[in-house]
Image (cartoon, rainbow, N blue to C red; front, side, top):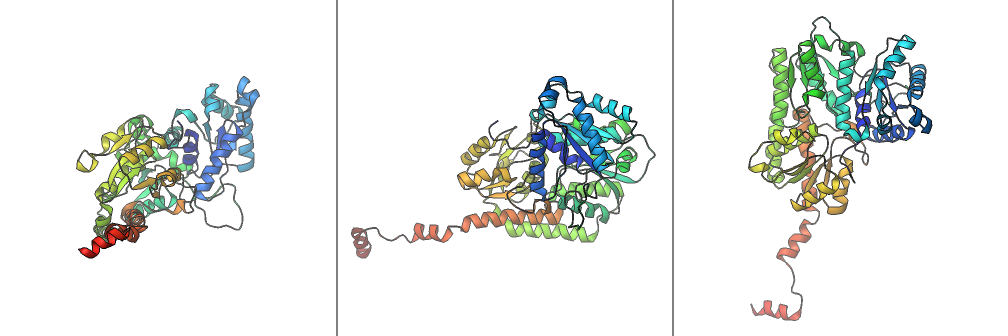
Length: 453
């Protein structure tokens, strides 16, 4: 694949593990892999990102990397004193057939430690960062959740989202009077306030004790409709511990946010507060205000399948026609999209690269792109303006502060789209209108012709 639309699988694993309280990550592979991922994540969140490495070299590649991984675990425990360590693998470790789960099990037994160590098999060639993210969240839940007494904390399984979006979800949960366990929660760990003293392990994240008790929750809300049951953490909790599962899309757009709120109302037995109903009304008003501009939008939408699905739904609600969207290998996103006049031109690409997205965007006369920073080539090559959303955003600041979920977040997101369309329309508007309707005669004969008339 020449120019992929996604990052590699272990990077998603790191993102998930960064949402666990006092956790550290070891990338079992070469030093360069961890450096590349650390830089990419740090650029998006504008935060220091510590990631360990087993530093596999030629010797480890030939004779096995168990000794390197054991040394890395020793060093991570000594320097960071974490409550949890996650081990994700790279292409190299998987290619030489490292049995990381066995190495981790033997390490814990040999050292007599109770600290949980989560092992996730995430070869870079095995899938995208989105697949690595969901697989790692599933491994976290499988490793930690144990049979416990029933309690009142609702599980909320979070896809890759901005810290600002996660804080908005917390606001909704608090407004409905629900106690909760978010898994994972990067709202603080990856968006820290300024502190005079540097902390090696930032505060925040999902407490390990809460993860252990997810099995006793009254329900699980999983913001994931495109993932298969085999990697769904909520499905694991339902099948293993009988925790009822609500699977809803990321709450972007009216319908998706309504579905999220309906789940909260069903679990809590309460109606939404009047203040949230007012926010819904303001979003409807914003959609009426902007529809007269957005109906001209023809969008290329790319990124994580969960986000692409939610954004596509929001675009359809506001009259923006999705021309090309990037889907997933399992084809779930394609099956979920409505089949109607608005989607009659939509092409869903399974596991594409940007060259194909560019080709289909040009064929479909797309005039706006929505996705992460790597889609900036659509602007540079074809002049299609890009509304940045998702991960990674590394050519702008503030990716961690983008608010796009809920009724208020959707209104802000639609404003970004509308203003981008308007800016593109009026960039040469006066010049184009002048040339079209008031073009002067080009030579004397033409001027005489005009005079004779």
